Amino acid sequence: MSTPAIRLEQVHKSFGTRAVLRGIDFVVAPGELLGLIGPNGAGKSTLLRTLIGLLTADAGRVSVLDLDPRRDSLLVRRRCCYLPGETGVYQQLTGRQFLDFALGFYPRHDAARREHLLEVFALPLTDKVRSYSAGMKQKLALLATLVPDVELYLLDEPDRALDASVRFALRAVLLAMQQQGKTIVLSSHHLGEVEALADRLEFLLDGTFVAADRLARARAKLRQRPRVRLREGGQLPAGARLVQRESDDTMVIETTGDPMQWLRDTPPGAVESAEVGIPRLEDLYQLLLQAEQDGGA
Image (cartoon, rainbow, N blue to C red):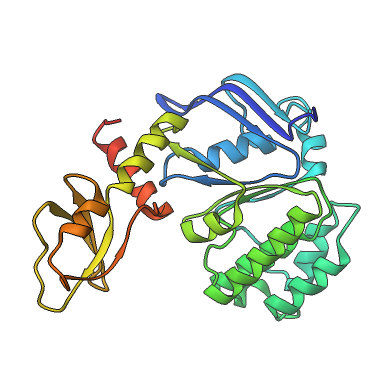
């Protein structure tokens, strides 16, 4: 059995009296593309910074590529690339000067990936970085992070400030990297992007990962919440309550019994369309977050 690319055992990290990571157990296999989901303040950025050695865990064991970032942070960083959630690029340099500087820390580069990203991002590399928009600075940071040929990529909000077409292109690049055997851990607020990309999702709430049985209960609850659109002017038939009304007038409802039986019992023509038994990531995330806020299951 191959050595995990990442292994955390009972990792704790606090800032003053505030516990940010609380007994984290975490394993990522080589070549896996893992998505981290969680609200702001859940501990995602702290976790990634701990992996790269920018932060030191207060307790527990951290292993990255069979190295301890506390003792071997330089060796870890030679074999990893890290994109922080708050992009920092040198404003006084041109885009090309910044790339030459950033890529100079890595002996091996993927030339084909570099040329592809340069074409997709279409950055004015002869201009000073201070003239770049937020999206252009993010593209520059992505070039500096994805062009090095390393084993592990830790990406904190890589699609931040990018428009939809560029996010789609970035998705294709990350999938191609995974097919080359690269290990990738990324966090994002674009839940649809993460769902399309990741082999596996981990939900981080209040410094701990959501347990598998809790996820299973949440998914089961969502299966009782069909999405329906009523005929114009129609009323919600008995046996269901409105949970949420979306912008296109789709209603997320909760039925008192089996949703399919409820649909069969509705008056003919009352429901224009229905989606049953397909838990969406966004809904799952919101349900888990609401339960956390309520102190619930």
